[in-house]
Image 1 (tube, rainbow, N blue to C red):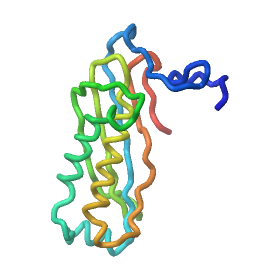
Image 2: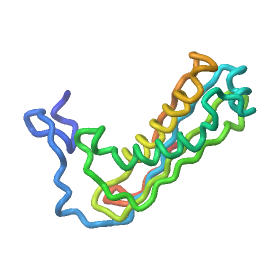
Image 3: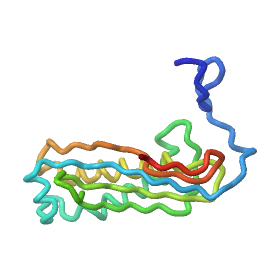
Length: 162
């Protein structure tokens, strides 16, 4: 990796480090991320009709996503452990010809570091739970387009995906 990149998680010698946020000011932080769970057409119609062998899929996925967001620092080595004020998972069928469920995770806190990773981990784990709950219908389910949609707070200010 080039030493010219200003990556805060790297020492000058290229080694990893956790960023010191001790001197940073606390600000209101928010992030929203999404993941898509794409289904083969027949399986998607079964999901929409509630014809799923393991029963209801939304609540287990929602709870899994919230728990994952709260435990992000246990999964991503350089993330700080954060006391999140709020996490919300929503799961909706895409309003397009795509046969997909759209998972969104929103997270916020008053803190010294952002919640982008918490939102992304929450969306990912909720999507993985949907896969687990529906994989008996078709193994061709695909998780895709995990991305940050929006963030606010902190020195860099607001950002929104294009």
